[in-house]
Length: 448
Ligand SMILES: CC(C)=CCC/C(C)=C/CC/C(C)=C/CSC[C@H](N)C(=O)O
Image (cartoon, rainbow, N blue to C red; front, top):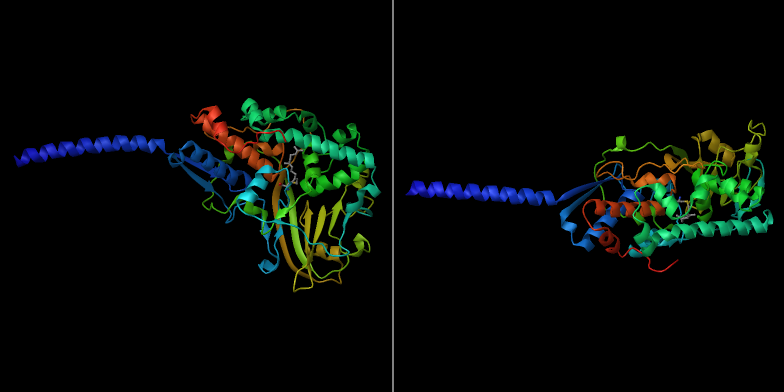
C-alpha cells in the first residue's frame, strides 16, 4: 500500500512539475526584455515613453526595461562641470546648453519634474560681440546696426515657417495619418523640409531674400557656435535650428531633464548601425582674473560672449590675413564668488593648449583651474539631395533612435525620435497601431 501511495504521489508530483514548467515556460515567454543602449536624451526618453505607454496599455509587468549607460550620470551630451570640481561654484554646461520654448518635450518634462529654468545674471560692461578673427563687427544685442533690417526680418520669417512645419509632428491627427515613421526620409517628406535639407544654409537663405553679408557673418557665427560648421557647409534645416536657439537652460544642469534613474553596465550594438561622421568639438573651461582679452584679440574688456564668423577665411583660403580663428566661441561667466575670477568656456575644433589660453587672456592675467573635454558633438550635416539616412529599424527587434540626428540634432529631436521608435516597437510587438497612437496623452489636439 505504502509503495502504491509513493508511486501515485511521485506521478502526481511529476505531472505537476511538468505543468508548472509549461506554465512557467509560457509565462516566462510573456516577459520581454528590452535593452536601451545609452541614457542620453534619446535613451532615457525612450525608456520613459515605453514605461508610460505600457502602463497605459496595462502591460507594464510584461516588459523588463534595462538602460545601459557607460557614464555614471544620465544626460549624454547634456553634461555639467563645477569650476575646481567644487560644488560651491555654479556649474557650467559643457555640452547642449540651451532649449527653446517650442521644445515641447523638454518644456513638459521641466514642468513634470519641477525643474527650474535658469536665467543668466549679466553684469555691467558684459556684452556679446561678433568677431571675424581680426575685428569686432557688431554687438550681438544690436545686430540691426550692421545688418539690413529686411534681411533680419526675412530670417525670422524663414525660421518661424520651418519651425511650424516641424511642430506638425506633435499633432495627434497628423500622426494618425502619417506616423510612426520607419525612415528619416518619411519624416522629411511628411513635414515638408526637403528644400531646406537639399541646400546649404547659405544658398537657402540667400535664395529666399536674405542678403549675403548677413548670412556670411551673422548666421555663420550662429552655425559655428551651435554646430561647429560653417553656414556654407551645413544644410538649411540645421542652420535654421541654430537661429531658433535663443532659449534657456535648467538650473542645476540640463541633464536633469532626462532623469537620474538608470545606472548599469555599458554594452555595444554598433556593428548593426551605419557609421555617422560626427564633428569633434573641444570644450575648454578655465578660470581667470583677466579683465581684458589678450592683445591678439584687440584691446577689449572681457565680453559675455564672442561669436566668430569664418567669412574672411572663406574668402582667403590661405589665411595669410593671420586671423584668430582657433576658437569658435567664447563665453564668460559673472565673477565666481568669493574668487575674483570668471569662468571662461571655449568651443574649438582642435585641442587648445595652455599657451593658447594665456594668449586669449594675456600673460598678465592668472589662470586658475582648467578642464578639457572632447565631444563627438553633432553629425556633419552638409546639404544633401538624397534622403538616405541611417536606418531607424536596422534589424528585427533593433531600433536606432539617433538615425534622426543627421536630419536634426537637438535634445528635443532626440525625444521626438525616441517617441516614434516606441510606437514602432509597440506595433512590431503586436499592439494595434491606433491603440499605440491613442494610448498616449502625448499628442496635442489643436494646431500650434
Ligand atoms: C526644424 C526646425 C527649424 C525647428 C525645430 C524646433 C527645434 C528642435 C528647435 C531647437 C532650437 C534650439 C534649442 C537650438 C539650440 S542648439 C541645440 C542644442 N544644443 C541641443 O542639443 O538641444
